[in-house]
Structure formats: structure tokens, C-alpha cells
Length: 118
Image (cartoon, rainbow, N blue to C red; front, side, top):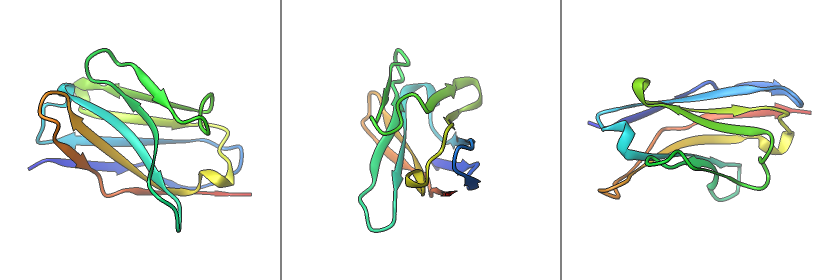
């Protein structure tokens, strides 16, 4: 059974930092492209950052470039999202997503709440 479990969310003041973690189990982690998405109240879920399985190329949404950093530790089956200089508009539920490089299978975590106060 595949599981993606996010952690590290919470309440932080504007300008602060948080580090999200997503621990995967039940899959060959190194074969999965991993990404972070977020969904604010009343809005669609959008891609924040992702990292390719094959060459660790990264992509960032314009809104987080220079502030957020995605990384992964294949030995720990974990992907991280370091979030710095947080803004109130970063408030959302953050989800981890894995996509099989060869299989195309998609898995989501349950989400972790990030709230940034002004």
C-alpha cells in the first residue's frame, strides 16, 4: 500500500520559515517525480514545486521562486519543501504528489496546513 505522509505545517508569522516533509512508503521512491502543490480556501490546487526523478531537475511556480526550495533524500524516501520569507498569501493546505517515472501512477498525500499571519 502506497502512502505519502506530509508533516511540518503550522502557524508562522510573515517573514518566517517552515520546512515541510513528505515521507513515502510502498513505492520505489527513486522512480517517482515528486512535487508539492497547495490549495488555498476557495481556490484550485496548484503546483508549487517539483523535482524530476531522473536528473533532479526542479520547477518552481513564479510566486515562490527564490523563497522556496524542493529537495529529496532517496535514501530516506522523503521529499522536502523549505519555505522562507513566508507571506500571508502562502497560506494553504500543502500536498505532496508522486508520479511514477515509468508507470505514470499518481499518488497524493493527505495534506498539511500552512498558515502565515500578517
